[in-house]
Each structure stands twice: as C-alpha cells, then as structure tokens.
Image (cartoon, rainbow, N blue to C red; front, top):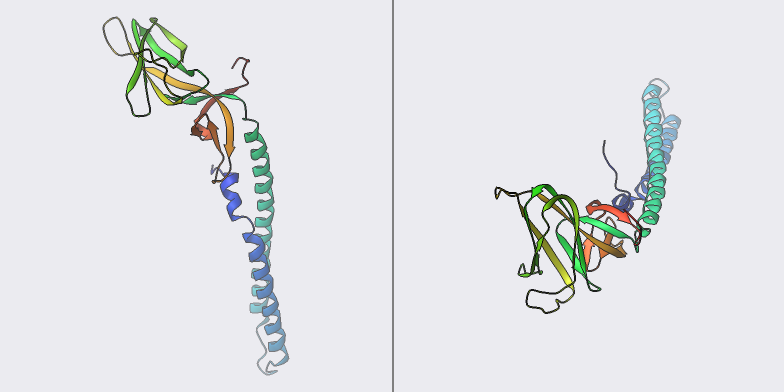
Length: 223
C-alpha cells in the first residue's frame, strides 16, 4: 500500500481546478468546431457522427477524472488539518527518541536503555558534540531496561554547558563478551516547525521527525 503524506501532498493542491478550467475551454472549442462543421457539411458526404460521439465520451471521462481529483484534494486537506492538530498536541509532552543523542538542558540529560543480555560490567560514557568524552561512570550489572540521568558534571568536576550530548553504553558478560544495548533519549517537545513538507518537532535544540519518536507521555505520568 502506498502511504500518502498529507503535508507534502498539500503542495500540489489546486492543480485539478486548473485542469478542469482547461478541459472546459477545450470542450467549448470542440462544440464550436462541431457546430461549424455540421453547418457546412457536404450533404452528399455527411460527417461521421460516430467519431464525434466517441470524442464526446472521451471528454466526459476526462472531466469525471478531474472531478474525482478535486474530491481527493478535499480529503487531503481534511487529513492535513487533522494531522496538524495532532502534531500540535505534542507540545509540552515528554518523548522517547530512538538514538543515543540527547539535549542537556535545565540541569540534566536523560536516556533510557535496554541491556539485551546478562551484563557483569556496564560503563556509561557521555561525549560532547565534537565526540570528546566528558563523563564516564560505571553501572550496575544486570539486564533489561534502565534509565541514565546525567547532571552535567564532567570527569574534571566542572559543569558542562547546555547542548547536544551522546551516550555510549558498553556492557560485557562474565566471559568478557559484549552485550548488545539499545539506547534512547528522553526530552520535552518545545516547538513544531511546519515550514517543510512535513512537521519537525524541536526537542531542546534537536530537530526530530515524527518517525523518530518511540513513545510519548505527559510529564509526571507513566509511559
């Protein structure tokens, strides 16, 4: 099944109305020519009316197709309006985003993770936007989901500036074999940008597409 993006489809709206005007002009021209030919036809060699009938049928079919496109445009407009309303409802919500990147603001940055195996040793490393590690700490052994909250304190004891940071989690089992860890970030939606073909949420200073969101909840409620 082909998925239609109502936001990108909005850019082509109005084309069927223009096509319909063009069809109407062509149809009027066709009728004028037909009338002129009928008035000036040779009685001994009359015009073939079957051809005119076929052309009339073709004009009618094209006109019906254009009309169907107009109805589809109206449905797209309604769909886009509903989508806009739904996206606005994300404002102020806490979202869980796929990936290791999170925004450090208001004194903390939060990630969720899932250790997919039994880990005997877990290490958390936070790096700045240049890829330089600024904080390293150990985690409790175990498996399953967890949350890592960083308060912005670096390994040198300084307070890190607000911005984008990346969390890398290293986990190994008892034999030293690496255990896979899935990492996600958590943030508050503070803006929506409609200037492109699809809405873009802003979470801190990060731009987020709707398909990057794994979970949504209101602050103070459970997922």
